[in-house]
Image (cartoon, rainbow, N blue to C red; front, side, top):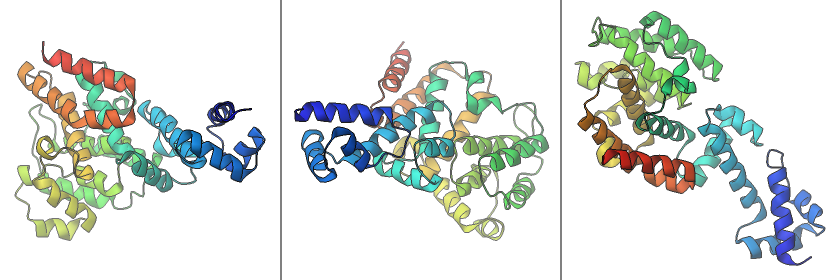
Length: 304
């Protein structure tokens, strides 16, 4: 067989075994060559090493699964990673951002594409009529379900209640319900644990007079550091530069969008344009034609 035929058959073998733990020995053996000769041949044809190519293909397939709402850990195991952290590291190394940001992006696209969000996995668990106590119970359950260590959660939640007090939303609901829902969204996005806790204080400097020293006394340092950066973080100006802050801002905005019955058309168009500007670079990096098409559709609607 000539080189192109060998390469094509090897690519087909990789695609057919993409969920297995494929080794270079297996791929070379299937092609009928030694590992060393095949490695050289493959790189000459594909301009990338065999295992780099395998890893890239696994990540591309995994990305599609995540965009469909599957849990990151489940996807990681399905495509051969032994740990959640190992997959996150590989994902960030390849794309330059985490799967949590991928979730956030997809939710924004769904929203501004005027699709029914009630069928979205992330929103099925959210009920705007739940009390703060009921929502907190759901948050505890979801953190356990997603494999988080929620030992600090009670202390964080109690502190949140103490500083926000009896503040109400325009709907008449306890303001804390909004904050718990933000954290709940972050759990569904499988954000870092410190980011989930920070989400419960996403507007603490705007809505309360709490001092930074008081935050330091009651919250883990990793959470406080996120909140300090979040204080002056403007996603419209700096985009996704600080991923931890960006994911919190997006979760906060998504819940606000879900809970307002009416948004002025001008404001909706403004936020849709922000979404396009922020996420188009990521979508192009993903090389996902469907997502690019969805963003372009939003862009066209903004001009109507």
